[in-house]
Picture 1: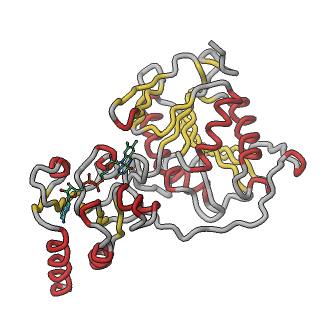
Picture 2: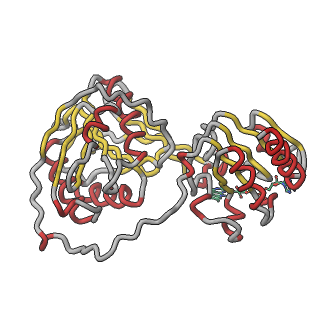
Picture 3: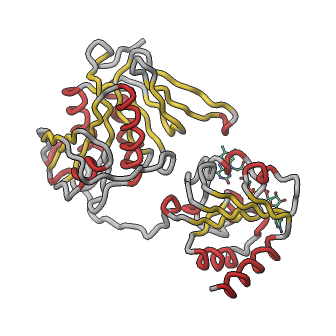
Length: 334
Ligand SMILES: Cc1cc2nc3c(=O)[nH]c(=O)nc-3n(C[C@H](O)[C@H](O)[C@H](O)COP(=O)(O)OP(=O)(O)OC[C@H]3O[C@@H](n4cnc5c(N)ncnc54)[C@H](O)[C@@H]3O)c2cc1C
């Protein structure tokens, strides 16, 4: 077995979280990982450390403390303004090699995934990708829950010898917790040894999409194949409830709605207060995306549909009748 660059005999008792930023805000998933990482660190009596590469930290250090970090390792450099895998890998690699934390958690965002894969190879350690739960045992071993074979198998993975124990987690899996802006912590500035020549990627233009973020919506009206192409009524209902529209995979594949709105294993994991799920059968690949919702109301013509087992309230009926009736009712009471 190939040895990692450092092992359990050298590891430092700390949980690190990659603090991802887009130039204006910390990623929601970073705050979620601080919340869960904080719980795990408290169980073990370890430090929770935020690793923050950026051009200039604009209030993000304080935000990290407020969300549970005891310490922030700050790497500031103009070459770290936007994510490039070479620059970020180099800085993260040097920091990890120097400080040797036991655990390193990253969001399973496009950038987090990119960075985690590169680092795992450089450090010759393992990477548990797209974890759905994280625990620790008393010896400080991270137990990562990962589903495989389309959700048919749930694996609990431990890294016995390799360090750091790395895991990525998708946005929405953990709640972000309540910030406490009275919390304080330590800032450690990291040396940055980047040169323009050492970074081969040049950002020519940066285009920020206007994509919807379903993980932030308190109300979701979700359409499945049973809705057909009639998503218009779902948008109407969602607007009346102050929410957003999501979908299962079939309407996305049919092109009735954009992919950013797909909920589930290969879509977004959400935890709204209320989800109204219309014309959805309730396959595991979908329900995993709303299993943390506060209240689920399902509408389906088939009383035997599995979605009713995942719902708090069920309406056996045709969505093309029930949804317009709900809209009429809400318009009257509005
Ligand atoms: C590896 C893998 C990953 C996947 N990832 C995802 C994912 O992320 N998200 C996802 O959603 N799926 C995913 N899938 C697909 C998933 O397995 C299901 O096929 C999908 O969720 C089914 O979508 P559905 O419920 O809309 O359609 P169906 O299963 O076809 O169900 C339609 C339901 O609508 C009801 N219905 C029909 N007409 C009406 C009507 N007029 N009024 C009320 N009810 C009506 C029917 O009774 C039925 O229950 C994945 C599959 C695989 C293999």
